[in-house]
Image (cartoon, rainbow, N blue to C red; front, side, top):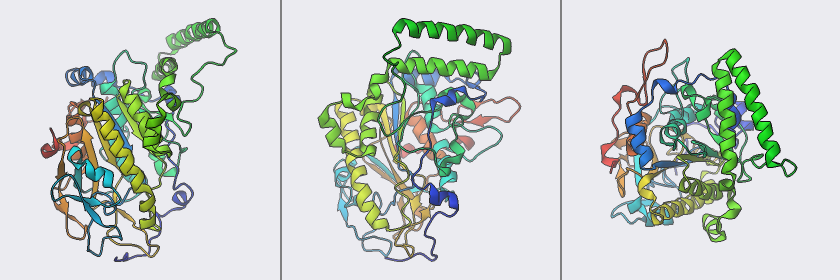
Length: 442
């Protein structure tokens, strides 16, 4: 195994040392942000209505910190870049995954793997921003995250279920400084930001206290509406409208609070997904999309950032990912939902083909891998390849714009929808007419 040409043992900067395993707290309190909502300016009724009718949805397994492609989807047996793990055959002839992924190897014919991702950002918070929004920042307005766009476009108009749900147990960390509450949804407006569910598998304070009778609750709500209407009439600001939208959102969520209670699901399901928070949250994501949630993002802090003891860390983490993704894809297929549910498993970049002095792999956006399955995606495809040591992409390089164009197209959304923001040049959902990867589309 080769070692790094430098001795970088971390991501650099004191913030990261203190917050390596912390993730953003997406909060419905963001609904009262002063962010101006422009959704009325760029509604896409034809595409969005068709997608809504088909009940399309998306689950993003966000592997924060970035797993190694060598220990997952793109092993390099016998090469200096390889680790101690063997490669194993899959259900696709000639295709091998890491031996740490036997379950996914068995369903490779249901998965699609891109081995030729090539991006430019090598620091966490810039790369997380890039791979969640699909493009680099263009101030002063903030591009909405993938979950905000998909949620806004695919949510059933009469549904009380939040359009964007973030399942993650960790509080806000400095790696996610660009995702402060209120700017996940960017110019769409804070009402399309995520509702966050933490480690207790439920949202706090959705169930009224026992001492509050239903009549009392209704009286309080009537009083709130009276004062809110007067406040809004006197001021007529985006902030007032967003504040009222947040209350309406919470009222709707109160009616579907039982959906967030994992204890109501069969014990056999909970056992299959494993005892860890990542597995349990993925099970909850399956349950939520079954019941109408258009976009659910599952994360688990930042465990994949393996600057130290890469092989040992992956030996602990990859089997859980393998098991969880296997059960998720199979469950969706058995329920007749896989054709309408897009599953994405990715981090913000890959890991270096060499080890540093701490036996870890550092950040590497030059050549990395991710997996897709389900809605609009052709199963059993392995796209692109890296060179024999995984140093660079050898064929079919894919950047974040083409990835997002592929995701939107697979879900039936127009990747080139135009955003006309007052006083600014036009923005597009995917810039520069970047083409979807047609080889991946069903």
